[in-house]
Image 1 (cartoon, helix red, strand yellow):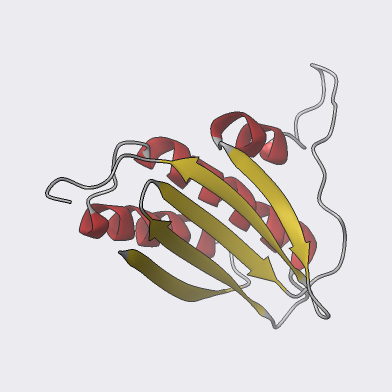
Image 2 (cartoon, rainbow, N blue to C red):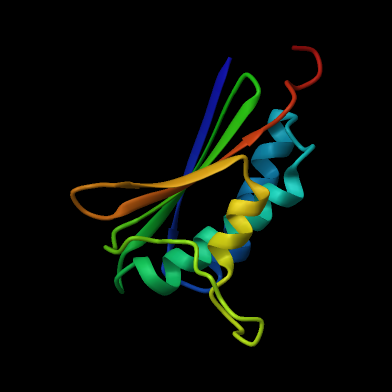
Length: 132
């Protein structure tokens, strides 16, 4: 059984905790909470990156969650350009580790480019919900 949910968020700092709540509520509803902390942290990082680097003022971004069998996919789409990449930073640098965190926690991640904007996605292997 395939499940899918999508929500748009404005370009606002309040969107980061709102996206985490959306993710947590969706995972709970689907019975897919075993990796909830990792997934919610990755959503925070991807939404923060979209706000800081990817969404021009006045635009929205979209957070999508899909679950199919034993894989859960998180996508954050924004209308900005750019090519998000994992950065190699020194211990003294205070920012720039978001995609490194996503790479370490997710089973896979990447970027899909669109005519306008991009989608940064992460995939998590999960157990099927109870009763399936």
